[in-house]
Image (cartoon, rainbow, N blue to C red; front, side, top):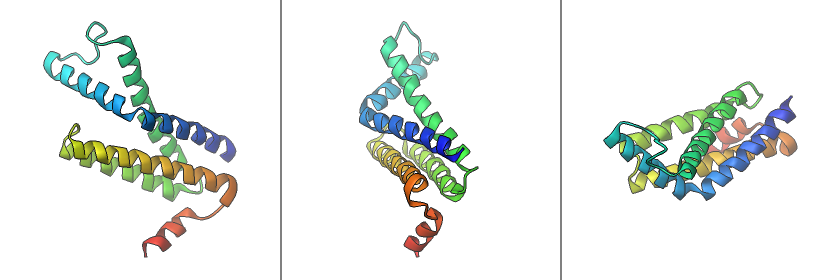
Length: 145
């Protein structure tokens, strides 16, 4: 069962890498949609935006949802403490981005760093499951103290 979960995690990791590759187009589309919603009170009207932009926006939102779902199911695995840290890190960084302002330069930098860190944490947990078999939480505690 664990192999199936982590193989799914490998697919999540690949979608995250694609997300990082297309990050700036995502930010541009999201900013257009948010500004349009602010002025017209409709979110993604097909007559205002290209169909490709709407599909890309939904794809990017799906990647974020997929990250949270995979992390939540990761709490049921033996490395649940690491997944709890990932969820907490995601939540706190999202709060920080909302507090600063979503489309400011520093928020964009934080979002790229957050996405990169989460992608690397997913990679480490997947490699650990298939090859290393280490207690990642103990390693994290040792590196912090």
